[in-house]
Amino acid sequence: MSIYTFNPTFKGIFRCIVAYSLLQLPVFGQKYNRMFTINLNELNLEYKKPKGFSERDSVTSIKCKDARLYLPTVLIYSITNKDSSIIIGFGDFIRYGGQHDYDPVVNMLRRKKNEADSVYFRPIVYDQKTARSEFNGDLAVQYSPHCSDPFLKKYNNDRYILVGKKGVGEFTVVFYFTDRAKERALNMIKNTSEILRFKD
Image 1 (cartoon, rainbow, N blue to C red):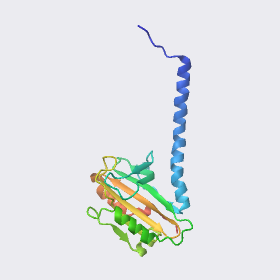
Image 2 (cartoon, one colour):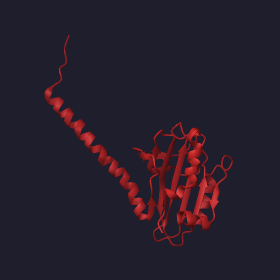
Image 3 (cartoon, helix red, strand yellow):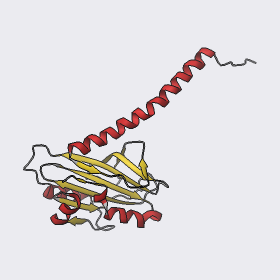
Image 4 (tube, rainbow, N blue to C red):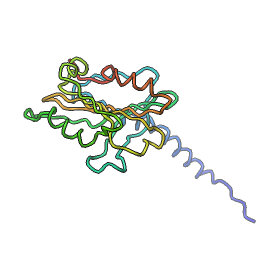
């Protein structure tokens, strides 16, 4: 019977690898947060993290299995509350750049009409006055996409808030929540502008 002994040299190398990996975790976190920060700066957005929420550790791409008409939503940054009953994600940042003739009002409505599940939740199109007062934008739309499969097999409720501003760009804030957290989540959705909006 052979007895395996841990080689001291390998043990030292192994410890170095583990230590190096642990040191890299904050670096990855900084890079992850950096993508979000770059988009905030490019679109001149003001972000305020809700109390009791903390950063999640990965970029997430969502495309419902029964959705054929649109591209996946990519959340480049997301946060969650302490009991993980609510996830708030930020994604689909689009900068219009020099496209001053691009009309977000017309194009956003056309896209969301194809994506929204009007049976489960009738889309809410904010009037221009409300969009300006809430988000300092030209248009805001709240909707729920066609999706029969729960997000991460846990969150069976969702709301997407899409906001656009002419000559600047658009962003999406996504709320995923469990039935237990529905009341709190819906209250937060009403106050999405307190989380993310275009700066004055």
